[in-house]
Image 1 (cartoon, rainbow, N blue to C red):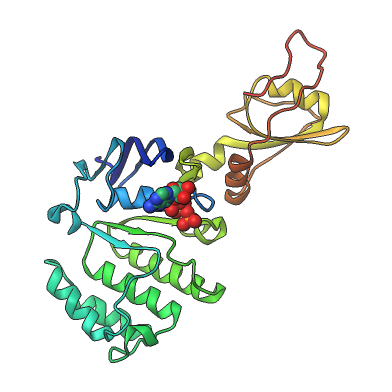
Image 2 (cartoon, rainbow, N blue to C red; image 1 turned 180 degrees about the horizontal axis):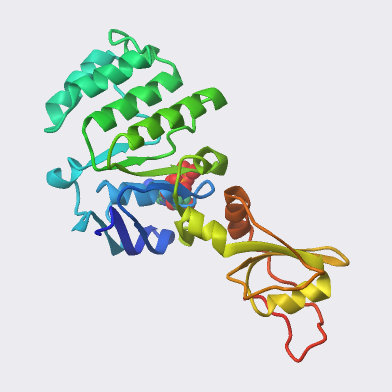
Length: 300
Ligand code: ATP
């Protein structure tokens, strides 16, 4: 099946510094993909390239197999986009915004928009500037969804919301996703926001992709090993070490794809999404530990 979004060796330079470098990943159709990375990681740059607002310096990106070139009208009708600041005209009423949406979008679903706003108790006659941050985010999401896009891209949609509004916003997004074949890419630097709603992961740091794939598979592929330093260091020779933490006697590793690890002195446990992402962002190398084998433990 054609991926909803494909980036291949994507790079973007601002002057002499690179905001993105060699970024390759896919978002399968129907996925809810979390684009996670710290401030300045390159999330907005990547998203703006995906929606045709910014040109890549190198590489290419396509939406449903169609290369993104500038603001192609045909492509943009398939993509709903909500920028970081939930852009609404502050002096327009919500009703005015619906009229703008209807005017600009060929597949506009007016009843979907009105039903949604009614359920959220957002008054249509209020100017957008007088709505709360959460209400503004919901109006921006409603406008994007009423376009009936196949791919919905949201840049830090919950950044300005309080914890309850965050929860409500993400739950309402899930309702939208459950109702159709929509693919979603949403960014955040707060992992816990996206943990419950996403099933695909793209971790970005300093402009490069550290980890990407189906969340469930990635979680199953990683394990935490802890135990005596020497025993763990010996095991590390058979694993890809992502992150290492040591004390005087003990060592804890996050590893990928270990072979069978039958050793009673070692504790093996699974990992949750937040720990996994943080481990990739930290990436502390394996320290040298002398082990009693022919091989020497080394960081991969
Ligand atoms: P945040 O979470 O803080 O919004 P981000 O992950 O969205 O960050 P970007 O806004 O894409 O990151 O920025 C990535 C890098 O590119 C940063 O180092 C930023 O300073 C730089 N950058 C972004 N826009 C420009 C610009 N117009 N001119 C120069 N540098 C820029």
